[in-house]
Image 1 (cartoon, rainbow, N blue to C red):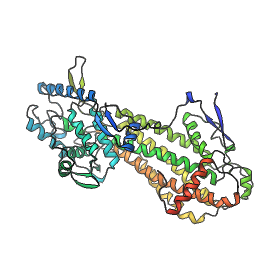
Image 2 (image 1 turned 90 degrees about the horizontal axis):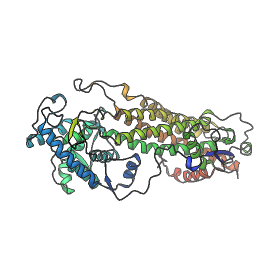
Image 3 (image 1 turned 90 degrees about the vertical axis):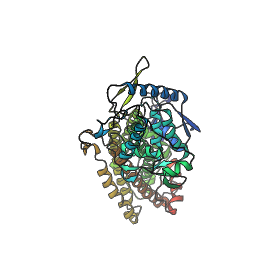
Length: 516
C-alpha cells in the first residue's frame, strides 16, 4: 500500500503519507478563535467548539443583514396580499390554526407573538446547561441570517444581544417532542422580549423583565411571523448535540489514555497484537496512531518484564485488549457521522413556514418539516450504542488489572465495582428514544423524532463513561505503581510515563474526575 511504518514499543504503527491522510476524528484542530464573529448563515461543529471555548462577540454579517431586511419587506407584503391564511403569520397555530390574525393589525399581531411564546412555554424538569442555551441562541440567530424565515434582522440582533451581554435564559430540559423545540425556544423567546421568566446574569438569577434593563437592553416587540421563527425548528437539539459531541471528543482522548495505561499494567505484548500492522479502515489507522505516542518505547510487555514479575508465558492477550482498536475506530466513525448530521442541520433552515425566493426576486411561503431533527436523533442513538463497548472494555480491563495476583490490588474492589451499575444504566439509556413515541396535539404531530431525548440520553451516558474511564485509570495507575519496584529500569511508553506522573500528582488530592 506504500505505507510508512513507525516503530512503537517494537510494533509498527501505520502512518499514511501526509498527502493521503484522511483523519477520522470528528473535527480538525481548531484555529485561533477571533474576538468577533459575523454570522452569514453557515456554521460548522468546529465553529461551535471555538465559540464555547473563546466566547467571542457575535454580530450579523452586513450582507446577511441587508438580505434579511429585503426578504422581510417582501414577506410582509406577500402576507398582506395573500388570499390564504399563512401559518403563524396571519393565523394562529396548533389547534387554533383556523383563527385569523389580520396582517395589518399591528396590535393584534404583537399580542399574538406574546401569546404564542407564553402558551408554548410549558416545559418541566431540570435545566438545560448554559453551554446548550448559549449555542441555541447562536444557532438560531445564524439560521435567521440565511433570510429564509422572513424576520427582521433586529430579531437576530436581539438574540445576539443576550449572548454578548452574558445573559443566559433558564430553560427547562423537558417538554419538546423533537419535532421543533417549541417549549425550550419559547422560553428563550420570552427572555428575549424581557418577559417575566428567569435568566442568569453576572452570577445571579432573576426575571428577564428586570435583568435586561440592568444590562442596558431596551424593551423589544416581536412583529408578524417572528415568534414562530424563534420557536420553530430543532435549535436546542442541535445545540445539545454540539455540546455532547464536544464532550465525546474528550471521552475519546480519555479512552485512549485508559487503554494505553491498562496495556502497561497488564504488560501487553504489542508485538503479538495486530493493532499497528493490519488496520482495515482509515478509522483504525487513526485509532492506532492515537495510541502510538502514548506507548512509544514501552518495554512492559517484553519477556524480561514478565519474568521480573514471575509470569512464565502467555498464549494470548485478553479480548478487551485484542479488540480495542476496532472498538475505538467504530466510535470515531460514528463521531464523524454525527458531526455530518449536525452540520447538515446547521446549514439548513429548520422553520415552518419557510420564506423562499423566486428567480425574479419575489418571495413565497412553504410549509416545512425540516424541524424534525430525525437525522440528529438517529446519529445520537448510533453514537450512544457505539460508546457502550468503550465502557464494557474499560470495565473488563480494570478488572483484569485488579485481579492480577502479582499486583495485589484487591483493596480496589469497591472502587472498580462501582462501574457495574454505571454500565447497567448506560445500557438502558442506549435504547432508541424514537421507539417510544406517540401522536400529539390531536394528531397534528402524528409522528415524533424524540431527537432531543436521544441527545440527552447520549449526554448522560457520556458522563457515566467518563467516570468508568476514570476508574480504569485509577486501577491501571495503581497496577503500574505496584509493579514498579520489581520492574526496575524496564521502560514505560513515552506518553504513559508522563500520564503516570500526572496521575501520581492528582490522585492523592482526591481527584474524582480526571478528564479535561
